[in-house]
Amino acid sequence: MNRTLYAILVVMVVLIVTGCAPQPTPISAIVGSSAPAFTLDDALGGQTSLTDYQGAPVLLFFHMAVG
Image (cartoon, rainbow, N blue to C red; front, top):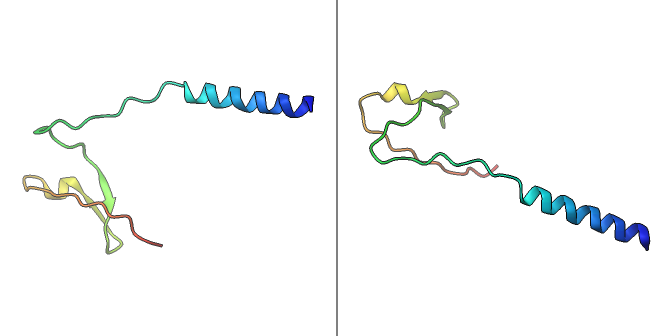
């Protein structure tokens, strides 16, 4: 019983410490600012870069594919 209580206490301490760890500050998008350069895989198996569309409006649509 003493060993089980010790294990529960250790798990609780670990959970508290990891929950209190500082979280990274998210980068917020500012309307009207330029997007950072990036390259993504496209639906046809190639890659597309944001720089391919420089000077044109771009709409990004992210879809979680099944599989």
